[in-house]
Image 1: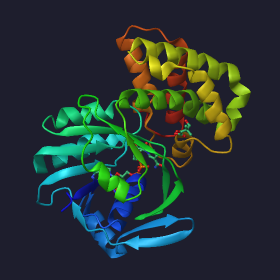
Image 2: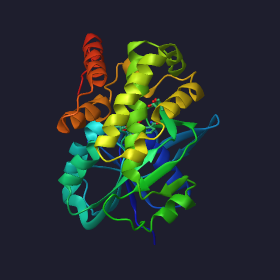
Image 3: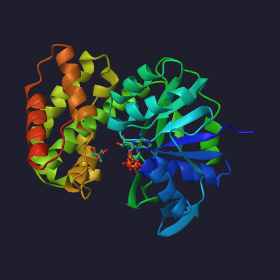
Length: 305
Ligand SMILES: NC(=O)C1=CN([C@@H]2O[C@H](COP(=O)(O)OP(=O)(O)OC[C@H]3O[C@@H](n4cnc5c(N)ncnc54)[C@H](OP(=O)(O)O)[C@@H]3O)[C@@H](O)[C@H]2O)C=CC1
Ligand SMILES: CC(C)(CO)C(=O)C(=O)O
C-alpha cells in the first residue's frame, strides 16, 4: 500500500501533481487553507486538469489544514512567501519521520521551512514544468518539463520516486540540488526583473545585451563566493540562450506584476542581494536592480517582500 500524498496548495503546481498522482491510482489528499475553501472545492467536484485542450476532472479528496490525521508525505505547493507559515500550521500533524517535498522557486523559503520542522526530511525540488490556473480548481498544463529533486544533507533517494514514475512525472534524483536551485535563481535574476522594468517579453532583452552581461558577471561572482562554482559556469551564455529560446514568452515575474499578483522577489533577487551582503560582496548593479524593482512594485501598489 502506497503512502498517502498530502498536497498542500491547490494552485498550479499542486493541481498538476495531485491530478497526475491520482490518475495513476495513488492515494492523494488535498489540503486547503480553511473551511470556506474546502466548501468551494467540494462544490466544484474536484480538480480539473487541462492537457492539449482536453479537460479532465479528478475527484481528489480535500481536507483543511486543521483536519485530523498524521501526514507522512507532504508536497508543499504554495508560493515561496507562504510556504513557512503554511507548513508551520501542519507541523503538529507531521509523523516523526515525515518527508516534505518543497516545490518553491528561488532560495530562502526551503531553509525557513526546514527550520520549522527539524524532525522532518525536507527534499528540495526545481522544476521546469509550466502550468497556470484559468479558473479556481482548474489548471492548464502549459509546458512539459522536468523536475529535479534532492536532499543536500542526505544523498539516499526516497522510495516514493517510484510513485512519480507511475504518475508520469518526469524527474531525476539530484545530488547537487543546491547548484540547480542557484543556477535557476541566477537565470531568473538576470532575466525576470529586467523584463518587468523594460516592459518586454524575454526576447526584448536582446536589445539590453550590456545590462544582461553586467548582471551575469556579478551573479557569477556571487555564485563563486557562496561555494557554487558549477552554477556560475557559462552563466551569460545560458542566459542568452534562454532569452532566445523563450523570446516570445513573458517571464513569470512579468506575468505576476501584469496581473497585480505578489512576486517572489525576496526569494530571487532579494535572496541574491542578501547573500552577497552576508559575504561582504559589493555588487552595485544587482543592488541597483533590486532598488529599481522595489520602486516599480511600490508604484504599482505591489508588496516588495
Ligand atoms: N506555476 C508554474 O508553472 C511553476 C511554479 N513554480 C513554483 O512553484 C511554487 C508554486 O507556484 P504555483 O503553483 O504557480 O502557485 P499558485 O499561486 O498557483 O498556488 C499556490 C497555492 O498555495 C495555496 N496556499 C497558500 N497558502 C496556503 C495555506 N496556508 N494553506 C493551504 N494552501 C495555501 C494557495 O491557496 P489559495 O488558492 O487558497 O490562495 C494556492 O492555491 C512557486 O514557488 C512557483 O515559483 C515553479 C515552476 C513552475
Ligand atoms: C523563462 C524563465 C527562465 C525566465 O527567467 C523563467 O523561469 C521565468 O520566467 O520565471
